[in-house]
Length: 444
Image (tube, rainbow, N blue to C red):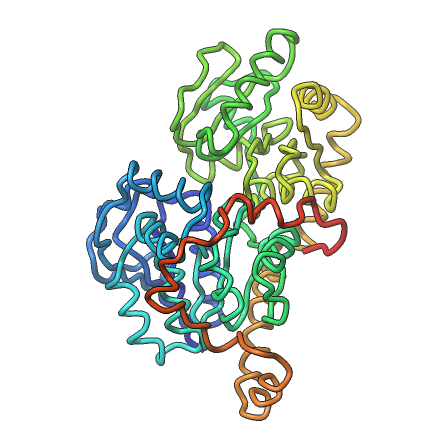
C-alpha cells in the first residue's frame, strides 16, 4: 500500500498542532505502508514565507517533497477578507478569495498531487480549512481521506467546505465533538468516518528530578505547553493566574513551555522556559502537579493526552467543547469557565490533595485504552481496508444506489454569476446554528 500525506508545513522542528499530528501519523503508518509527505516550503504559519528549499528531503526515514508557496499571507488583506466572510453577507467568490488569502497558496503542490494521485492508494489531507486541502480534496476526491483538525470557529460555517466533507472518501475525526460539529455543518453522515485522534511517543521513563536541577525549579508547579498566544487562551490564563498568585502566596508556580507570541508577565512565580526538546518536555510534565489547557478552540489536545499518559491531571477551559468532553470521558481532569472555578480547581488538583493521584490513574488508563499507538494505527488500517472493499464495482454500485451524491465526486461550484451573488449568511451566524456542547457519549 502506498500513501501520501498532504499537509501545510512539515518538519522535525514543528512541535505542535496539526503539523505534528501529520508527522506522527506519517511516521507510524510508514511501518505498514510506503508513505510520502507532500508539503510546502513554508516554515512559519503566519506568513507562509518560503524558508525551506523545494525538492526532496527525508525526515525520520519518511520521504518529504516540498513545493513553493506562490505568495505570502498579507495580514491586513486576510483580516479584511475574514471580516467579510465571517461577519457579513457574502458570496462563494468571497469565500474563495478568503481561502486564497489564508494560504498557503501553492498551486505547484496541488498540481503535483493531482498528477501523481494514480501512484497512491489513498491521500491523507491535513487540515480542512487551508488552500492546499480544499484544492487537493476537490481534485482527488476518489482517494482523499481528510483529517480535518477542525475547531469550533466561523470557518466551519463557510459554504465551500460542505461539498468537501460530503465528497471525500473518508474522514478521520479527532473527537466526538469534532465529528458532531462537522456532520451538523455539512450533512456528511453517510461518508465513512471514525474518531481516531492521534497518539504520542511518550517515553517509558522520565526524570523529574533532572528537570528540576537543570532549570532550577524547586517549588510545586502547574505547566502550560504550547504556543503562548492570545488565540490559545494564554492572556486569560495570565489574568487568572496573577489573581491566584496574589491570593495564595504558597500556591503553585506556573511553568510555560513554548514560543511566546504575546508578552509574558514578569512575576517571580512565572517561569518561561521557551522551546524544549522532547526529553525536557516530558520530564517537565512528569515533574508538574498538573497541565493547564486554557484554549477556547481545539480539535484535540495532544499535550493533554501526553499529560494523561504520564499520570498528570488536566485543568481545561470549559468553554472548549472538545477539552470539556475529554475531561468528562476520561474522568482525568477538571474544567473552568470563570476565575472562581479556575482557582478552586487549581487548588483541588495540587499533588498533595486527594484528587491528583486518582485522576492521574484514570488518565493513564484512558490514554492506553484510546490513544496508544497500536490503537491509532489499527483504526487507520481498518479504514483503508474498508475503503478498498468499497472500490469493488459491486460495492460502488450498491453505494451509489444507497446515497445521493457525495463520497467519490465533488459537487460542482456554482456558475460564474451565481458564484458572485452575495446571499450567503456570515460564517459566524452559521456557527451559532450548529449545536454546541460536549459529546455525552461516544468515546474515542
